[in-house]
Amino acid sequence: MYMKRDYLNSKKGLPSEVKKTIIIIVVAIVLLVGMYFLTTFILNSDSGDEERITENTIQYDEILAGESFNQSDDEYYVIYYDSSDEYSTISSLISSYQLNNSDTKLYSVDLSNGMNKKYVTDGDIVTDDASSLRVKANTLLKFEDGEVTETITDLSEITSFFK
Image 1 (cartoon, rainbow, N blue to C red):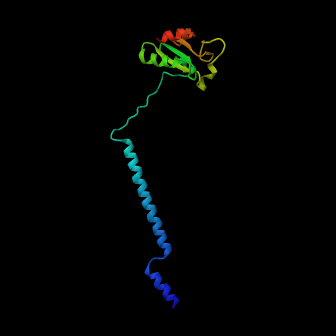
Image 2: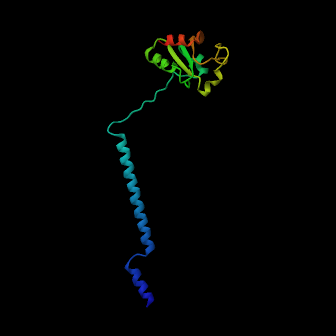
Image 3: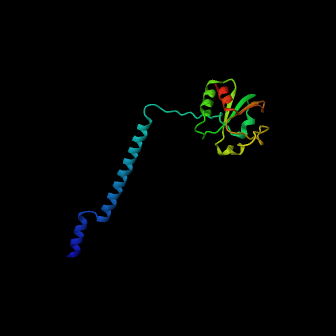
């Protein structure tokens, strides 16, 4: 008699483990579909109606100190400065010169860059070649045909050059 009752109860519906498994699968599918539509909505609303095109440009105006002698121009200037010096106005002068003057190319060397540390000196400035180059912050060199022809270390002279 007990067997008959269990048999009848099991015929009324699916076993409880099967019901739980089906519920878990349905909930997982609903969550995945919901995440898909939410992601699609966010990506579409972020891009807007207009397409954003970002052009990558290679910046050639800031160079490493070791590249000072290797530029392809016949005549150019290289300014050595320390961008971490908050009181220096050299950065703004460089930007202004590069935007307004196209006659003679100006390259800048940031001496606070770790790659340029070995070229910094507290003593005398040496401008013979790239391997022996030693400069101080706020030094302007004029290069002609790969050789230094003029050296300016006075900040007021550098400022007047940029203006």
